[in-house]
Length: 142
Image (cartoon, rainbow, N blue to C red; front, side, top):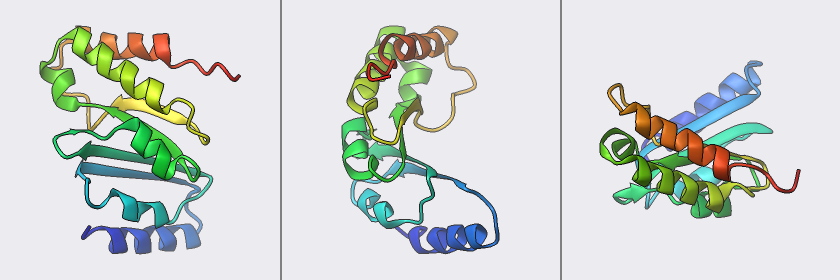
């Protein structure tokens, strides 16, 4: 919550100064009680919003699309800890679930890790995420 007002002010100022039009909001950590305030943040036609967690779980893509899908591109997440310490099947399943819940977002959808890709993540887990994206990330309407 504490970063909302200063970040909105900074985004408005840089857009006014001619930067942009891309804006990327990476809301790291638990945003169960604060994600909804960001729907009123400054957005351009090229804004991407990513919310890391809802409590101790990844932020559901369905909830992300419900609250932000009409205003920006939604960035659905796969748990960074799962990519680092889970099995390829767990990573594949969570990626598929997040993609299926978000891929029909009106302004587009991106899938990726909830933060960074861990340095020592097993390559099989990264490949599992990519495979799920290839298997479930196609847009039937195009």
